[in-house]
Structure formats: C-alpha cells, structure tokens
Length: 315
Image (cartoon, rainbow, N blue to C red):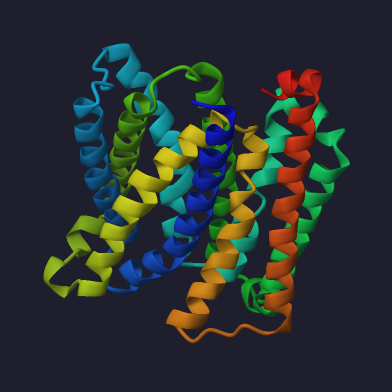
C-alpha cells in the first residue's frame, strides 16, 4: 500500500469512528428507553458483532484458535469492551448524558498520561498540547447549559456513575495501549473477535449479577430499541472497532483518542435533528472549538511525522 493511500485510509478510518461512535449516543438512548437493560444490550451487541467478525476472519483466514492467544484477547476484551464501553451504559442511568460526555472527553488526556513512550514527545509539540486543551474547553462549551443539571444536587448514585465513566476512560486507554504494544503485528480480525467475545462474557456476568435477565421482557421491547441494538452491533462494533484497531497501528494513540472530542459534536447534531434538542450559541461555539482542536492535534502529528527522529520515537 502506498504512503498516500495509507494516509487517506487513515483519515477515512478516523472519520468513521468520529461519526459512528458519535451516533451511538442516540442508539444507546433509544435502546435503553425501549426496554433493553444496559448489560443485556451490551451482551446482544457483542454477541452479534462477535459472530459477524468471526465469520469474516475465517473467510479471510485470519482466525486464530490458539488457547493462549484466545485467553489473552478475552482478558483484553473484558477490560476494553466491558470496562471501557459497557459500564458506560449502566452509568448513564444515573447521570445526565451531557455530563457523561464531558467526562468521556477526557480520554485523549488519559492516553497522553498513561503512555510513557510518547508523553515527552507529544508534550514538546505545542500544536498538540494546545489542541488537547482547546478540545476539552470546547466540550465544556458544548455542554455548558447541562453542567448545572448534571452536577447540581448530585446524589450518591450519580457520583458513582461519574466515577464509573472516568474509570471506563482509563480502562479503554490502558487496553488500547497494551494491544498496540503487545499485538502490533497481529492480524486485525484475529484478536478483535476474541476481544469482543471478552466484552460479551463481561456483560453476561454483570447482567446475571444485577438480575437483568429476570426483568427483561422481549415482547415489551420496542422496534426502535431492537434497531438501536442492531446499529450498535454492526456499525458501532464491527465497522467502527475494525477502523479503530487498524488506526491504532497507523497513528499515535493520543491522536487517535481525539475522536472522543468529536463524538459529542456528532451526538449534538443528531439530537438537534432527530430529537429537537437545543443548539444555541454555547453549543455551536463548542462544536467549532472542538473541530479546530482536532485539526490542531492532527496537524501536530503531521509535524512530528515530518521529523524522522521524532516520528520514530512516537511510533
């Protein structure tokens, strides 16, 4: 693959995870409101996505059935898909979605803090540092009108929910960094399929502990909820996760993580058109700041790549 083609594919993959994971906010809302319990929803999402990717990996002859390999990626999946994604469904039962989005937008910062290999290199690039700061400020602007509702009079479960969202960011960043470090040369689908099944195991265990299956009544689930679950599985897990894991092998993790800034922008736009949600001066200003911040971080990455010595340190 030529350098130019790889560069354009990387941009396309980045756009995919920004847009698709941004639309999953609405899909999650629809599924939960339509009668699917959080971890039951997660289990269904990962079961369907895992089966689809397993079939694709077998067709492409990338599937691996070595016991050690499977166990390693199942554990990564429990941390990444379970701890990094599924617990957010549960947390959003107790905190406002805007408040949760602000907490989730700390993800790029966690990538920088936790990745000692690139921390010093990234912090030497003023464009990247400024972009990370501007992006977080943009998130605050985007959800400025929700801050009071999300934080005022916060109760015990809301505090726990907020801590769970922060923990999910840490789990996601740690698992992503570990995957890049230990399995950089592993075929994309070989490990991803078992990671998704790891998320399935996590969701099944948690749904059992919380007795969600006893409360789950399929006949009461709305058609919109089933559609939301299907979208989360196919678009949110199969397409976006494949794009995300491939992109981790092309760009520094902290740069890839800036998708967490753009996801809320997409979510706000979807909410405006699909749910008649407000889009005022603060929201619009925040969106502009976030998009400009993402451009700054990616521009900084290109500056690092232009310098061969720095590029080797980052990669």
